[in-house]
Amino acid sequence: MNRRHLLLAPGAAALAVALCIAAPMPAAQAQSAPAPSGGQPIRVGEINSYTGLPAFTIPYRQGWQLAVEEVNAAGGLLGGRKLEVVSRDDAGKPDDAVRVAQELLSNEKVELLAGTYFSHVGLAVADFAARNKVPFVAAEPLTDAITWTKGNRYTFRLRPSTYMQAAMLVEEAAKLPAKRWATVAPNYEYGQSAVQWFRQLLSEKRPDVEFVAEQWPAQGKLEAGPTVQALAAAKPDAIFNVTFGADLAKFVREGEGRGLFRNRTVVSLLTGEPEYLDPMKDEAPEGWVVTGYPQEQIDTPEHKAFREAYVKRFNEPPRQGSVVGYATFKAIAAAVEKAGSTDAEKVVDALSGLDLSSPFGPITFRALDHQATMGAYVGKTTVKDGQGVMTGWRYADGADYLPSDEAVRKMRPE
Image (cartoon, rainbow, N blue to C red):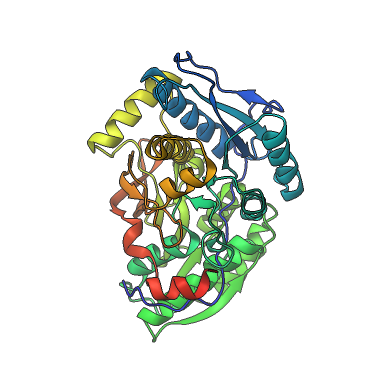
């Protein structure tokens, strides 16, 4: 991986489409767990798009609930103070997210903020955090801007960014004999950024490739027939796909029916995550190169312990969102303990360079840009026992897919 790319534009957030039905999130919900004795609770304000994105955010909520329960069962923080979460729904709107962030700070007296899913929502809360000097751990938004062009002292991000995951896939795509590429992506920041980075990074590794077609369906409104027909007409050797959720399912079904994927490799962002792979069941694609989370196959000690605890608590296997929620609140607990205080400036200093264990192994919140080194799993899709799964996968450590420190410094404000 060449880690000296000059960055030309911020990345984008990965968004999820609701693929399951869940009860709406109450306007305010405090995490309940046995309270250790030792003083007032440490309150964290958590903001996310629960009613709009239950396929991801409900497992995410269960992940942070498990983390909070473990922290409190172990005696709490700072000599026995309970960790408590007040959670709000942002409705997927930046204005709503900022409004509830202010309510959490003013009325609920929270000492940190966490969460968000959509990039534009995450950026709005990050700006709020900077203006109000409150620590904010952005759990899911993938936009590179949140740690680079619009980064600030108070904001930290957990998941590998759009740039990082595109770089992971390019490493595999560059090995293919394919020279003629087509792309299909939702027509908003996340899709546009993913295509931009994939094109740029692949062209740097393989100057002989060309991009012969682009399709930009509106998010959630993909017209599968015309999209597949247009891609086939360009006669590409391979396809880079960024659609997800219901759009992904329609694209796979129509593409299979029309033979689009016959003798063509598809490289696809996030498709290996259970949130997207599970609902397709035996219609899941075969042989796609994807980033994802093969939760049933990972046998590292950290992941086995997490998976067993999660299944015992919720009677279902974890999803990608579960890991994100769990690791977010474990990071918050570790930062508060390291700081020895809930003072905002001390917690921010503690988060900067923080090392901790996660279900994916050790990660670090880099002091340079507040980006965590959490990685993703890269492999291929297949169908086994009537269910889509990942095969031939490896873990791509996020630390190996970041641009050079020099490039980051050029992007990130002082």
